[in-house]
Image (tube, rainbow, N blue to C red):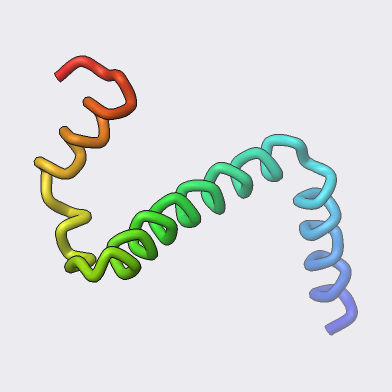
Length: 69
């Protein structure tokens, strides 16, 4: 049992000190929060959250940001 805890603590220590792991975690959290924000906007606007998966919505977003479509 003690050996298992030591391995777990070593893995956790490597994870907390690894810059790439922190970056990957940051990107994952940022993407999740982006989609939660879009869903919140749909809810505030009294719209259907499922429209988030509609391709025309994303075309509109890219056009608004300034991308070419």
